[in-house]
Image (cartoon, rainbow, N blue to C red; front, side, top):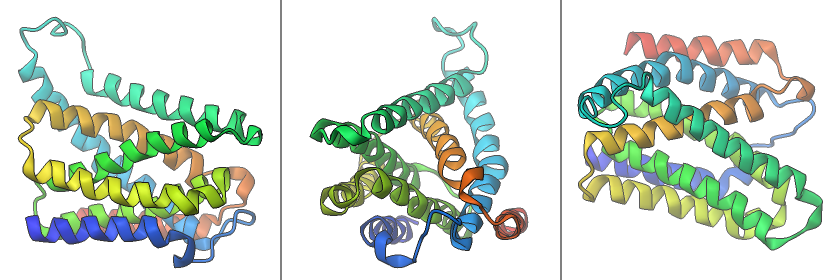
Amino acid sequence: MVDLSFWFAVGFAMIHFFSGKLIHVREIPRSRFLSVAGGIAVAYVFLHLLPELNEYQRELEGQIENGVFASVENHILIISMLGLAVFYGLERFATANKRKEKPYVFWIHIFSFTIYSFSIGYVLAESTFQSNATMALYFLALGIHFVTVDQGLRHHHQALYDQRGRILLSLAVLVGWGVGTYAEVDDLGLSIVVAFLAGGVILNVMKEELPEERESSFGAFMMGLLGYAFLLLII
């Protein structure tokens, strides 16, 4: 499983690095590829990610049953909510300062997505997948999701993203895989990383993959949604 996860981590890094050349992605009207990607991402969130958070919630309750936060319910969802809020705040900051052409705007924005990519690489290595097929489905969903994330970052920062941003994100996912593979992290730490990442994934699905003003193709969206849902249910 470690060997396969490494090659998937390399695949994630390659997607970040070559996303600008992988496919012709236009914003309006939305390309069918991105509409399919939106369907896959939504199916992944509702059929895989949210149920997984429920499992982590049970584990987290066992870890902190006697702690300060023992009386707080839905710990995992609170962490996911915070993850969504953090990524949304950074996105709004980048959007509000887009025309000021200040270097710190790019670095703050790219730092958040460096953590995002690091976390995806970390979860790839650290999670216990039921089979190679389930790991492949994780790679499929988030690999396609990366293309849309890269498109959004390229839209914000243009040449600066291609010069520096894509390299940092490519390295981040490999470093995340390395930490997940060789560092000792308990289940509590993993559950927090997954929950925080889930908030970011949900935000980016809504922001990049389901925008009405970009004239998405509903047929392509449903094809991605039903196709990926079918794969999740039979594997």
